[in-house]
Length: 366
Image 1: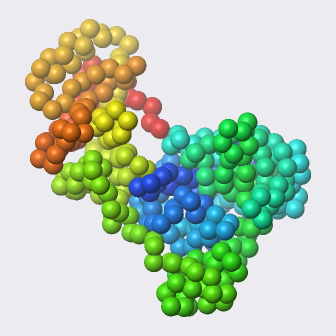
Image 2: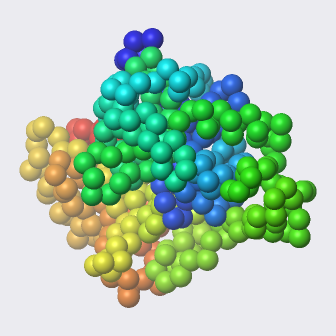
Image 3: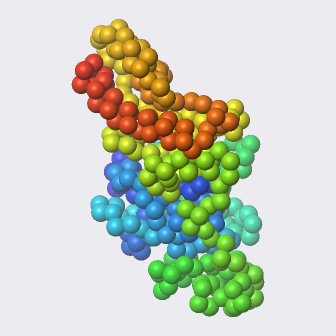
């Protein structure tokens, strides 16, 4: 398989994962009909939000977690056209081999970085890891490490902060072993014992917290359904407002203090910055036209005078409609009016600006 060909395949099969606490990456294995990721990406949640380049966000059940190997399996949705991604043979890997990390670092959709295997069998925490100088960043966790034949030879798991491209991936041999153990129980939530690797579920756990094989303490009751997360302060108020507006907050959540709402053809991003205490609700509509910009500016300024809760602004080459306010000003009644105004006007003005002023559609994130 040529490099361009397998990158196209992975672009369709690499999954974005989000919880109220974090974002990360996963990848779909068609042979087993599961999404693979890291435990620390889905930690404490029974359901997570998943998305691909082609399919919109939806919720998916967490099926399996393993704290020792930092693995998680997620129920694959009934999406069509997901590609066949192959697991490679770790034993064939050699120091110096070229590899690629594929994922969503810092929430940037689908990024690839290329490097070499610095050490194929670096032992850390009692396990072998593939050490690579491939750039791996927060958000890459759970994504595939791929050889030049387009085979998955590892799961990108952690980095050493402050190091110079010191990334570590769990070898595919451990992943294959976990899949083999889990498949006979597929469909049931399972935690693999961190001590003896026994597969623990609600039916065999002893006294609700001990592994039936070795007696190690395991509390599988800590997982939460994401709509029952106990939020406080501004985040809680924002979600109350979104619920009032009939927004599915589980789908809208995008990590901590970030939400994304699709309204018509527009995407609205809501953020709370705890450092400067601002709440922003913005929709990037389209890009400035090549001609007659003066007429457009006059129109935007005229519309701004009419608006009560929102304003047009220009960010670089993008036309934005939104609102910004201090956390102390947010309350449910006012918040509903502000968010609803952005939702309604975003879709309306996006179409108008393109049709009337020849504004250029924005390039969609991919």
